[in-house]
Length: 321
Image (tube, rainbow, N blue to C red):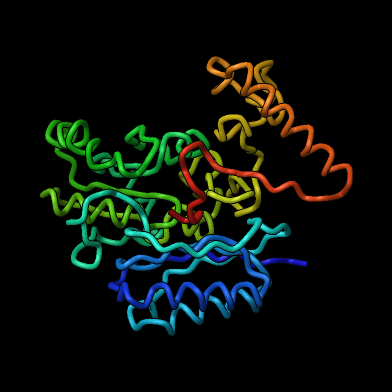
């Protein structure tokens, strides 16, 4: 049976007093519809990715859109998958739906100019455009747009410091006509443009709907995208057809691994990879080896072994982030 994956977000002021009630309603509707995934609720809006039968997913989205006038224009990206992308349904109350750590950043006040995926190639092909990947370093390693710069961060919270330390001097030296920001599904680059505008940057643009919308809308023959797109769910990464790609995660350090990474002597399934083997303690190796033994036993019994599928220190985030 084909399942629907829906990635969605919306920056909109929500009454904090009503979020707990909305959380319970989402859990009830999602559970009844066999929907799994992660939804984040905060006073600044909603951010989520869910997977399940189409009817269940659409009912959950309808509940959100009717819960508050600000959520009627929910940004949603849908596609089909053969396998469930999540183990369970989680609805969490947060301070921010994507954490930048600066209370003054308000995407409902001002953000960069939205760029339709069909117009993105022309913008980033212009030599006067500085293309900026706002994602984390382990995401960039899986795939990115050719010629883009990235902050080398392990968390979006580090983005403002990178702006002052490296981006501002770079912009002052190059004097680009446009800054073109992108992320997985639009939410991080939208918030990043709000921060840049707050800090006085000009000519700020961002890819509407993010990489996922671009991969959906742009013919692969015309695409400037290189590699796969990392997502924060069990698929790990998707290709240009939004199908599960060839990457997996190391269960030792939760970093994404390509087929070439898994062919290295440093790779031991469920235990180590090239990223973590230099710092892997004997007790960690023993613990991870035992975990993998349990995974193998469950696999032989035809059972699912529920384990984390995300980088260290990073709780599962909606995949469009």
